[in-house]
Amino acid sequence: MTGRHAAETLIARYADGSLPDADAWSLEKHLESCASCAGRVSGAVRATAAGAVLADVRDAVLAAATPAPAEAAPQGLRDAVLAAATPAPAEAPPLRTPRLLWAAAPAVRGAWLPAVLLVALGAVLLAHVAGFSGARSLLLAVAPVVPVAGVALSYGRHADPLHELAASTPSAGLRLVLTRTAVVLAVSLPLLTLAGLVLPSPGGPGAAAWLLPGLTLTLAALALGGWLGLRTATAVTGGGWLCAVLAPALATPDGAVARHLSDQLSAYVGGAATQGGWAAAAALCAVLLAARRTAYDRLERF
Image (cartoon, rainbow, N blue to C red):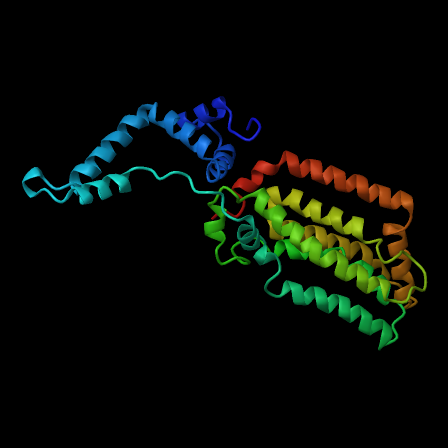
């Protein structure tokens, strides 16, 4: 695109069929709200070999629909047929709010949102009702996996009854995945961080120490999803994190799980240097995801 309109070279490649699928879908999406570009694309297509075929088809439809002279119908009928065969002018761009709600809905429905609330409330109850001193450490260990699981549960045939329809639109692919990922993060990050703030802190990382690891794991799952598929990628990243954090604490011979879990988390998410490492890893995953963005054009399309 050049500015707000499609470039001539882009339109020419679209007309002759040499434009890649991802770019063609983006152009078609732009044409929904740009009458100027729609007219230019229409003219470019008519100038190709397909233009003559389209003209023949239009003439054949008009000939079949228009009565013969001996059985001439009122002029109003012919005008109606001609009006139906003539492309209507582009309508005003539709409201973006319903489209955004349609794209984001699978990210907050189903069992995932109750699961987020269960994790947050469960940690609070463990701390203030059961008196478990390691409730915050347990929450910080589980919290980074919650948005990863939300991404897996918000995209694909298993999550969206309209997935086949959504996957065939120009808005499908990475754009749709990122929209739903943003909704997942917008819900889980404040809820779980707020839960951590109301938990007693016997030491160890703060309530927000899990945010960068959670973001990094989510981006890593998205980047791996281009190769493995989203569900497999989220299982690898989320399962790897849980094994790395929980397994050493649960395997301690002295039974002091809470203390060892706090030590593990301090090593993994505590300190400025460690957080800087997570930030660098998140940036690397984002670059890898951008480089592999075309892999999502056909991810779980069928």
